[in-house]
Length: 391
Image (cartoon, rainbow, N blue to C red; front, side, top):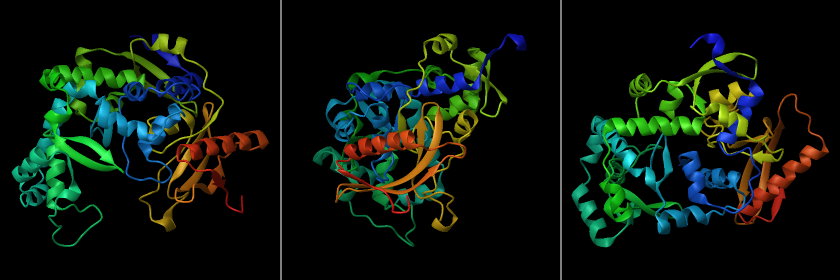
């Protein structure tokens, strides 16, 4: 295509498109359909840290503030509308996507089988015995087994039985049955995943086609690398081969500092631009693992917002804080806030607040933040928000 005929999308419009695409443009109100929320996003990342609420709960709450924490657990345990597996990280995925995940089971098995260190630990576990126990006793957590870590215990060390459970989970032999207080229970996949979905077989090429198309659908625009990173269930070479069979619409979009980035867009990009709504002016507390901010480079290019989660940075070297949340208002990130819940005493504590450079925080904006903090407190059944005395 002639370069002068390539669709150019200015920064304001591309920001609005991204917020519409990721479900943050509209006010987070109305009836809650958790499975549809997850399907629209593609997946929701699971995270162990419960600083206020765990990331997966926060991400869903950000799109509908009538969401309650138990809703996702019930969806996983009772309705079988979702399953857990690995994208770029542990994630909740719509159950109907399961047939397209066969290649991911195979890819992860090959990767784990190639790890000599992993295999040495795995050899200490009796996988047949573990699987037999699950077969006879039903879903079991890692606490049902007692093999111990050998040698020096490190941060990410796992006992042999945990390695074995995870290995069979990665390979698709086991699946997450449910969680209790976030504790994961493993069961045989055939007792968790509906028979009709396990029986559906697609070629590797068909799975790649689906993964790439589904990724671009949930990105609206991106490079081939962006498409590959979305699920992290393909290689970049596989995406390039897919692209050679499926020419995409080239576009240019403008960054916050006026530069132009070459990219590709979903085939209906112009319809998406026409139909997108103006982002709500409501102020939102965004989780660090939210799909809207997860790609830090895209975030900086789109919004000029330079953000990093510092949970793994030593305290003395942190620029901001341990668990700092971006604050979104309309189509701008207007600040950052560090929060910590005291669930026992039903309190949401504000540790520190930083206005973004160049953003004025008058009485109206502060009131918006206070309202959002009260709404977040309600999610965790806290009845009070405490600010530090210096603020």
